[in-house]
Length: 241
Ligand SMILES: N[C@@H](CCC(=O)N[C@@H](CS)C(=O)NCC(=O)O)C(=O)O
Image (cartoon, rainbow, N blue to C red; front, side):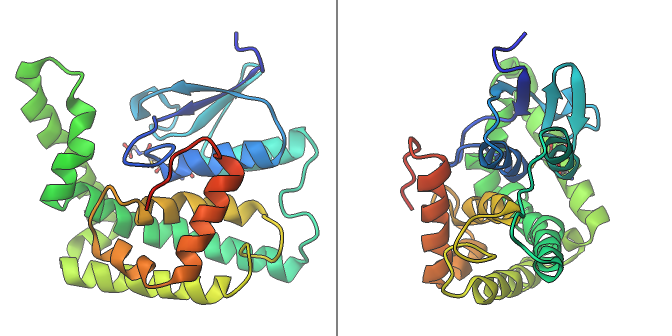
C-alpha cells in the first residue's frame, strides 16, 4: 500500500527527460497541478489494463488512459485544471491536445523508434534487462511492433521527409498558438500545458537528433516554454538542451 494511496504507474526517466513517455509526464504534471500526493512505480505497458502507460491506482480504483485519469481526478477531488477558462478556451485546449497526442506524438515516435540511429541509442535499450541471448530478437520485435502501430495510424506509410514536414507544420502551429504567452491559455498553466510539455520535451530533448527537434529549436518561444514548465514542475531535473 503506498503512503499517498495514489500510485502512478509510469515508465522511467530517460532520454534526457523525466519519463520516456509523454503521456506519463502529462498525468504526472496534472497530479501536481491538482496538488495531489502520489507515489510513482515503474511499469511496462503489458502490465497496464489497456496495454499502455500511464495508469493509476487510486485507493484500489484503477484508471487507465491519461485523459480518463484527468477526468477521474477532477471529478473525485473536485478540481478543475481549466479553472477560469471559458468554453471557447476549453475547446481550443481540446483541439491542441488532439494535435499533440494524435499527430505530433506519432511523428516523434517515428523518429525515436524507426530511425535506426535513434532507435539504437534509445528504445533498443528497453531490451537491456533481458537475457543476453534474447536481446537482439526482443529489440527486433519491439521495433517491428511500433512499425505496425505507425502503419495503422498512417504516418508510418509516409517517407521520412514527409513525416518531418507534417510534424514541422504541427510544431509551427504550436509556436503560433503559444505566441508570447507564458502558457498555452495565458499567464497561468492549465490542463493542456501538461500535454504540450510532455510532447514538446520529447521533441526537444537533446538526446535524439531529429528534424522535429531542429524545427522546434527554430522557435525560441517553444524552447523557453519547455524550460519554464520543467523548472516549475521538475525543478530537480537537469534539463540541458
Ligand atoms: N491514449 C493513451 C496513450 C498512452 C500511450 O500511447 N502510451 C505509450 C507510451 S508513450 C505506451 O504505453 N505504449 C505502449 C504500446 O503501445 O505498446 C493515454 O492518453 O494514456
